[in-house]
Length: 317
Image (tube, rainbow, N blue to C red; front, side, top):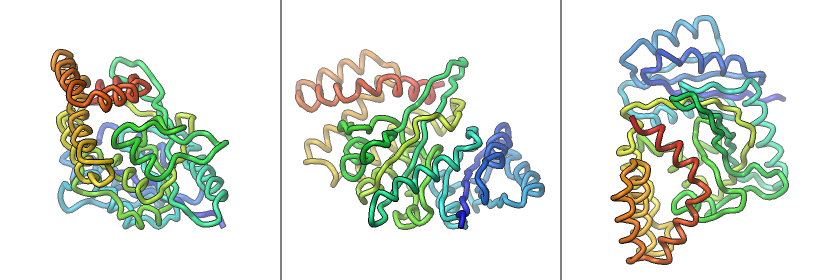
């Protein structure tokens, strides 16, 4: 029997683009399909707009949070309401290829078939990113090779937390391009509502530490228009990235490694902010205090230079 798949969309003050995101969900080639939209107490007309769309599309169910509680909590509501065997997340300002859901489903079940017992499998696709100046780039994801076992387990946790090199492990793991079995989200406890940013990174670290496998699709099946908003500021990103490191302190090799990784995140955000003088000063100080860790981390970061540059533009006014 063909399984029901749930598309989950969280929304907040998205009246300008939510209809486009929902249209790309409705246009998916996969059948049967349901769409669950959870509005995080928008102060504009987002909820009312989606209400009108839902009247014409019975496969769409709309829910409203009792108060603004952040994207992680809204995604947990989607997990709780989902009726599908599989769950994929769309962002309220992105557009997905019509075959995205079908392609990710096939990738997951084909990969699962390689194992006698079910393992947690999380699938992401590459994304086409359109900057504010109209330029485009492709944001890769990890695990795209179909010739070998996907990145998994503690190796992926190390890749995400401190940049440890992993074969076939470079690329983003953003929730806006993610799919997994609904049971996988439930077993892992969903998203941590403490995190209003970096909730996708924290979820993936937790999934990796639980033995999760991360498979990818090299084709960019999501088109993301990069727009700045206050909740996407570099300051907020830094705050929550440090919280992820603190939450998973036990994953680090020792206390020095943990403390260095916290300081490295601060150094990285000086570069992302464009403060080159402060960046170089902190980098030199780090190299004196932790020469091996600093230069190895700098070397690990080189393949991510283009991705980090795009991230910086996304989170700066």
